[in-house]
Image (cartoon, rainbow, N blue to C red; front, side, top):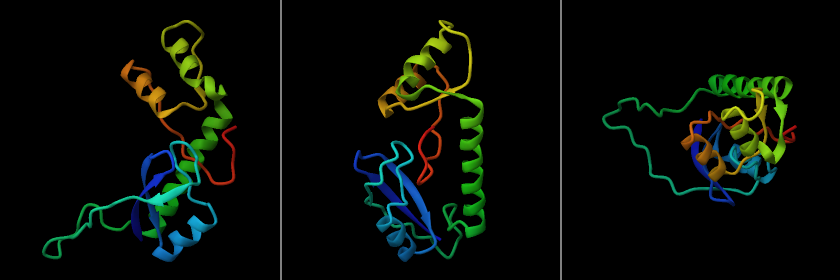
Length: 142
């Protein structure tokens, strides 16, 4: 497994794990790599410092076995499916609706939708609990 630091067209930074350099190139060409923050398929490798283990010691960021990566991917998909099946989709009104729920202006319910990175930061600073959902290639948010 190989880890790349990636960046989308909106300069969101994230990591991606790939079986090989060729696997990355293939997925990039097929637009199967999406930004987990905004869903953009406009992805490129970001500048990355080399990670060199000293004296043969195993680094904490050592390559993740493929079976673990696959299990993690399946768990993220299950989480996304659970949220989609059990929460109300509020679209791009997510930040506004999350605030209304947080401040007791409307009845509490679990919601999901879209928010900009700035909106998510503001919600977190206000104490509103939010978390991004994994983006799944070929599927819409709702």
